[in-house]
Image (cartoon, rainbow, N blue to C red):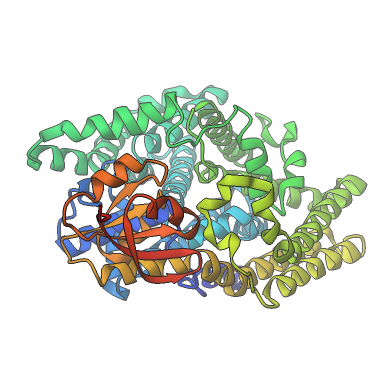
Length: 553
């Protein structure tokens, strides 16, 4: 047991290492960090605001955690991400604690290893988005409901566990809206229907505890804001009609995709464990006569299915949306793995699965090592879209970090391939998990900072330089630099966007005697100087900070 906690502690402690090795990432992370910065500085924690305008895209829970991080550690990427990393830590601990009774301590620990070493989990632990918190609350909701059901089946009440499950669902609503209630409720109903035990939901004590707690917590901010805001509940139009129903019915901000969008996203994000998924849905694991373990697995499977279907049919799609599915998949993989190991089952097929995962990780290591050679060739491949990343046209110097990270991945996969038939499969699985964790930790410490310094740091420096020439109540003009709230965050100024291909708008924006200060990508500078007189104040990394005046006749 102590070794289990030591292993989980090792995983989770790494989430805080080099947490500020990169700046906040455009678009979503920087946008949320800017909302939290504004909240913190204004001392108004009810009305989210971005770029001088109300911002009701998400409920405020993430903003509150980032504002608290700013209070503890100062305004910056570390403060924005600290509590998000703490949520990832709590998620691994929750998976272990809630699965230890139904699946056994070994399977619960292996589930934490699988989840903690997956690619998407490592990314989400280090980037402050709503998805990490949502995943934590939904995992807690399902785990607490399972405890409530088992207590009821044993002749007890289970009301306290229902209240805890409802509180988790309420916090999920404060984090990402109605989806925090829809997903667990649908999974619970499907699971109870599978067990032919829907009558449990009608227990008066459960209803009396669950509904008020879930809605009391989940609707608290909505009601408080609605009764105190000058526009009343008008914000609900943007929050629910546009960012709930609207995202479901039509792609937003260009984030669309086919119904199978999340198949490759899931397979890539769950690496190195994706090959194990095909062995994790054996029918006997979910048999009706399987007792508590089977009931728990049926609940997890129902949640996985509901989550995958809901996000697949939604029109707006982003890779992080599928994050709540990962703890469920980790539990299914761990249960099947430990079951095969305990029963000496699987044989050649299990060895092939482990070998496939190791081979994929070796290929990934080779790809990481090849990135410095591939990146300079991207402009020729993607054409005009390369203008959005001026760093692609600048010399790239990453040092030895990508080669060492790729070497770590290759060594990890090679070791697993060599030992998979000599050791017990469980031992080889731990080697794979901790080897992949070490690879991802090295990437976070040494590789990501190199690419961040090349591609993103120049824009942050441009924002701070431009802010030196703009009064606190002024604005920075962004010419062709679109979807960059990091400029607001690091420049602490509002921004105006104008397309370099719209000379009429440029002339209108710079009309009169004003001398505007702005940022333009070097590739768009020619279009700007064709409309206005430009004085260069600073240039680096493909960005130019400029001051303008209307061209003399």
